[in-house]
Image (cartoon, helix red, strand yellow):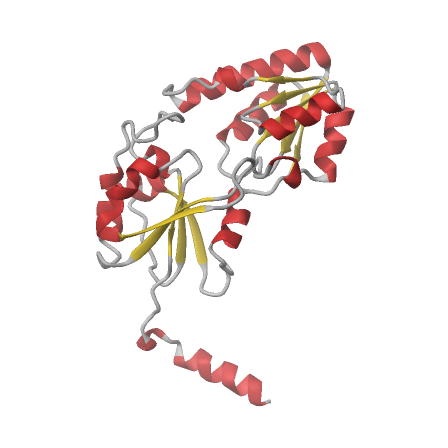
Length: 263
């Protein structure tokens, strides 16, 4: 059976490579690289591993699904020739990546084995950037466009990470200039239904290969549009929790917990 090995390469180049990822590189006959860090490209050359960068297939400004269709077709063209290939993605392969769903559907239809090698995601690194324990006050991860489109209820007493703020209001991805067609005013209007205008939010872009420090910019909710010139493909909006009022406490459950301490 033919095999496609999807490998997550983390955020910081080869520093985040797992032993499982390396095993897959050496076991496959060819590796396709997608938005690879320069350090990773150098790693393949150093170890004489057969690889090819196919990032050019992702056309800036095209519809996401159009780009993904071209990439999936190329991956299956390659596995038809080499039988066993690896496909590298930055971050975690299952985190916010539509490509995996498309690959799984196609692999099932043509009797090809698809395996996933996990990698550190931007969420992992942002927990460190924001010094956040996601369980302490609770944390929700949401796609910015879905938040607006489905008008999700927001619970301000939870922390929120809003992904894909680089493409609010568009199905196109402008990697080179995320300000194009970015309707961030819709996001601001949605958030102001749930938060006071003076609530401080942070735009976070984690450290990555070539940049050792995370980029964190703070603004008030009412000035959200001022972030637009600094938004990149990797930017996420972090909304800190608002301390809930004491009247929300479940007094019966609180009494039960206190009794268990005394027992």
